[in-house]
Amino acid sequence: MTDPVSWRQLSFSLPAELAETVSERLENLGAQAVTFTEGENEALFEPAPGETPLWRRPRATALFDESIDTQTIAAMLQAEFPDLQDWRHDTLEDQPWERAWLEHFRPLNFGRLWVVPSGWTAPDPDAVRLILDPGLAFGTGTHPTTALCLEWLAGADLQGKTVVDYGCGSGILAVAALLLGADRVIACDIDPQALSATRANAAKNRVAERLLCRYPEEMPAIDADVVVANILAEPLIRLAPVLSALVRPGGWLVLSGLLRHQGESVIRAYGDAFRFDLPALREDWIRLCGRKEEQGRVEHA
Image (tube, rainbow, N blue to C red):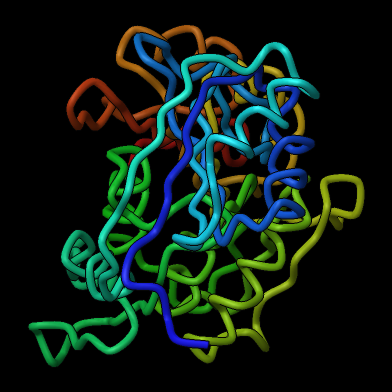
């Protein structure tokens, strides 16, 4: 059988709670790939820590072999799931999809750290190189909150330190910390796909032997030198007691996933235990860095 010269693409909107079920059904009907993107005029809602972000009514896009009649597929799905709406049918010419993706993902620089896709080298031969390709979990360094955290890690002295990446996603922050000199990193997430992606990315960068992946309920009682959590404001507020307890006296807490107007409420949640620097800003997103009280006093950075 020869490879198809074109593809049929079917897309539609659906309630978020049907995403997993409909995705499985599409695959059973012959879909080669299924993706979910933001619905029109809809903002992303805040998930719990480590959950895959999703919209209340995302748009599903399924890719089929050109021999598949997507009108028939759509009729079958509509009969099973009446809440599916806004159907679209398109024909796509075949192309080298991996190369097309690479045109949109170039090496990214964060001080002495470069994040590069497989097959690329960092422009600076003396730089620390983190190899990362997009996968099932979020986090490639392109989002402002991830970039803010990577910049902080690249500027910190992590040599011999213990770091916690809470809500690790793809593991980009955990792997970066290890490459930048951390002695060990504990990566924590509630999503098994995130922990799998983190282990895979650590192995790809040859730092897996210093990485420990854990679900929140499995986290050891430790005194970390640095705890970084790139989640969202509401989960960070709820997690204040948990994250505070993980930081040793004199250690650092790095929080992101926050919009500018959310900074004060997050700082209040961490009480008097930390002295926070001025927020770092990128677009409308901020990063908060605080140092934990040591020996009865709050230390400045």
